[in-house]
Image 1 (cartoon, rainbow, N blue to C red):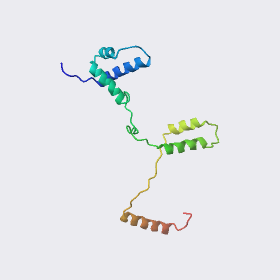
Image 2 (cartoon, rainbow, N blue to C red):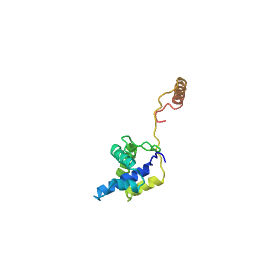
Image 3 (cartoon, one colour):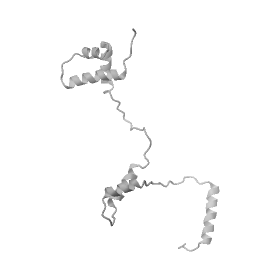
Image 4 (cartoon, rainbow, N blue to C red):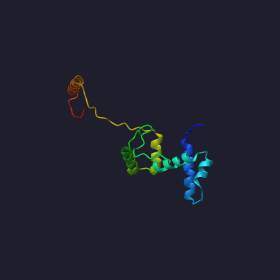
Length: 143
């Protein structure tokens, strides 16, 4: 029978069992825990050493979680909408939560206007020509 790696769940069970026994001050021998989980003494001690090195059985990252799709509304805009709903003075007797629910049920979407960074010279010229034509057709400011 050769050397066999133990799976992470098996190591975690050993680590968890020993952590539980120590936390509740239950007298135990670590070798008995290793034997119960089907590990050799050396593998058991290696699993416990990994617990100390990796700071627990869970993955702690210093970076934000980037999984999943991006949010459609950034938190700043969402806060503005919420402030607007909270401060809106309506002439009807309705709770703010009801307004929020109705707005949500209407499935309103927010469209953000982005500034176009580059306009080709041809398009710029066509826009200027169109503006001159419209100004000739509607010279009054009221139009």
